Length: 258
Image 1 (spheres, rainbow, N blue to C red):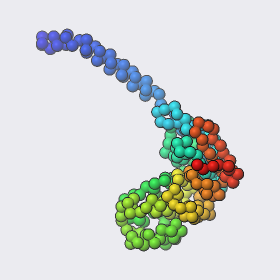
Image 2 (cartoon, helix red, strand yellow):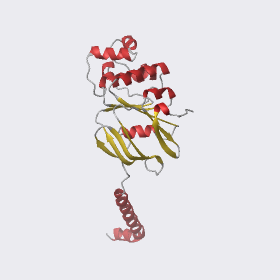
Image 3 (tube, rainbow, N blue to C red):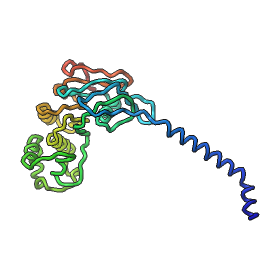
């Protein structure tokens, strides 16, 4: 007992410092818990609209896009262009409710599909790939769509819709992007969000897919670099580093691609 008491007495200064440090850390933790980072408000509805939207990098005050307001009507597809790093993909992810750091409000339709530059290839058959994430279609309809996106021969090469492979390895990026468009046409959402979704395709293949898309009931928002995309869109949103954004009719655009 005496030994234990003596140990406490000799270590009293260190114990006091430890208790004080723990108390400061506890108060700091409580204060940080009360400081919640600003988040974008998502409201379900249609048409797709942005209301005083500001995006900034997580855990920093670096602003990517400031005070952006626009409505994307169902007959007015939008193209987003700008230099690398200005926030094009971040804006599209915010519209898809995948990016929340910022302020303002997004009216988000419940029926929309996001197509990234590198499509997600799930484990499973080609049929499962094409019907991901929620499409329902008969085999005949699937084959019609595969013909549209020029993938029917590739599917036959692998042995049909029930073939199982490591699709991220056996399909080229261009083929994966065609497959993503097949998913889109089978799903038929109200809005499609295309983040450089045709970047691995030549311009003629890109034009073919956009012609099909434009003839459908799907309203689309695209991020891209090619000026050849302009004719398929109603309006152009131009983003600049450290400058205000600019919205114009795509046909009247003077945008120059580097």
